[in-house]
Image (cartoon, rainbow, N blue to C red; front, top):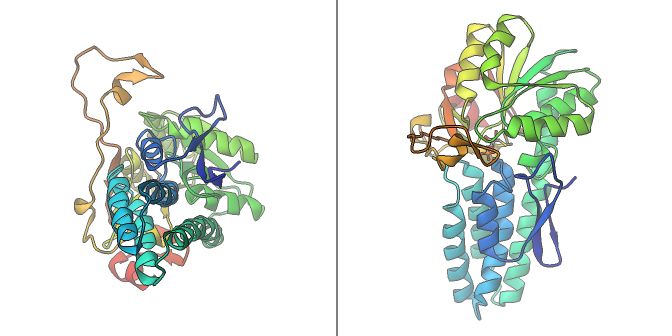
Length: 341
Ligand code: MRU
């Protein structure tokens, strides 16, 4: 099932807010609807929002109807700023938009139609390269997975979170394809249940045995010796190897350390932000209180209660056993190993 595709001059997205109950695609014909889909998590996951934003840029520039190269570049820069502001934590968003702008500036084309075609080709390239990168990551990562491994993951870093195949779930897929007979524990991932709704759905579709647990069960699961390793995705990795990922990841990493379990992060190099010295510099998105006070639209907390709802946390590099990328596996010290990649 496609996470996204370009069809009839529109970006068609699988609406992830409706999964797993309803499989429905939405069609985005303008930049505002792409921005809305990113904000509302109809499309989510670091590489997927980067790819969606790239198509959003094509739609935004087309709407502006620029008549020459100067107008085209101005419209592209303004649209990129608008799209980059939709979600602050995943660096893949800014990375993809910058890649399109760089491609534009490097071309000497003057005709707006030619420039649009160039942007669209770059957006398609981002998608194609993302799937290929995930498969390479899978090949590197599966070497770290012992036969019969019982793997805990948090949130959804699967095909849905990327242009296809997935990062953390890509490693799991690759291990399974290599005949390792793995099984998965999926943290449900409060508040928005990406684990229960999306990871479990992907694993069931793939025929990989999956067990959903609530987030607060992970410690006991490890204490009982029921899990062999943890693999998660990432939204941004700082130069020192600190990892921002879905809220709750940090707690899982602390638990893994306490129980002597490997804690792996799988992410393409486009998720690494060498411009940030440490995780303390990563902007963390805070989302609406209703995501915590309500479950499936129904209130579960007292009206008027105060809420703190950070969407991500930062796992310090010292808790990360290795970072699996599309260019190889980085080990501590990360300042050197990430720079080399
Ligand atoms: O808020 P979300 O659902 O976009 O958060 C997604 C995650 O935290 C993923 O683990 C991360 O983006 C990696 S996706 C390959």
